[in-house]
Length: 182
Image (cartoon, rainbow, N blue to C red; front, side, top):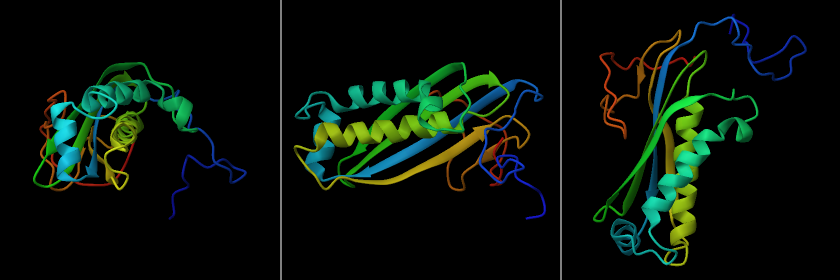
């Protein structure tokens, strides 16, 4: 790589990037987590009848709280004034799938990808915690960024995912090209 990464200091050690000189702009990120579960577990999540109570509601709130605390959990993440965070949880009984999607927004100098990913990660862990009495073999199969908008790299959309399908239904007119974070 010919370009030096700005996350590495002159001494070769990881450092927080200085975003002070960047212009503030609207930022949005959407993420997804998928959990593989038995049909019985998916049914308990869908019906709100988990052994510890209503799974989706608790996991949704946990995800929102986690997004707001991302900078405390991820060492090089900047604390951001989030203007919006939402988490939604759906189940597919036949496929034995619980899908969590999140969306985070801010107007700032750096993106909210880590906040969206943290929301999904913690919501997925919460689902596991809430259903482990039914099924210990739950598998968190993926936690991925679906879309990001704003900053120098502009709009990015994961191949195969439609823009605007997240919790806040925020649409976009760009096309996925992969690459970059801001």
